[in-house]
Length: 233
Ligand code: APR
Image 1 (cartoon, helix red, strand yellow):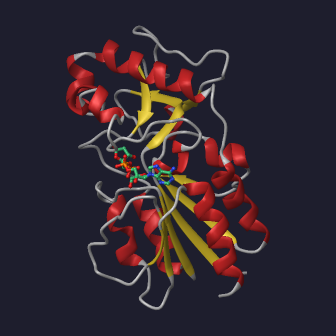
Image 2: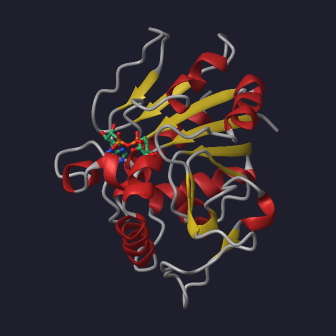
């Protein structure tokens, strides 16, 4: 089976009702990114940050995967699909995608403040007990924090993601403004002969100037069109 590697961003989940970050009215308009998504913000006011992610988790529990997530999961019948996502929601998994690499962490998980990437301390929260509070401890005795990669932190999954990009037979980008590195640079690892598709209702500039099949639609309608194109490939 051909290897289809997919890079997704916040636009993938927009039709599920989760706001994107940089569109008008997006999350970073409402919450100062330095306060809620940097290690400095967390150290300055851990409660604010913990509550912010409690709120995001609560919202995630009320939404469902959209048709775009479902169609992507269905492609596993015909392709070896690897989803590399910048999203911290679990909608790809809930739609049935079996191989999902989370570059920026996972909302339903929490970890140690001292060693956030140590697998011994990463725990999945249950939908019934999705909130954490000041005083909750990881197994190393430090404050539990969200398992989220904040700005300025390392992105440990990037090496794995690069390996998949180098092996891709087809590459697909869905719903990301490609503003945030290293995720935005992954396209540079996709071999030059590999066809690249991009689904996004807005025009997304591709830094390398490499030719891309653009499907200027939302995730669900865009996935329908992509499936037609892949049949004719
Ligand atoms: N379907 C597909 N794409 C959509 C839709 C939709 N229905 N609605 C909006 N989009 C597109 C927007 O046009 C935009 O190009 O989704 C993209 C969202 O871009 P951003 O808000 O910048 O989100 P993303 O690229 O995922 O951000 C990357 O930045 O803040 C950090 O860690 C956070 O993972 C995030 C990273």
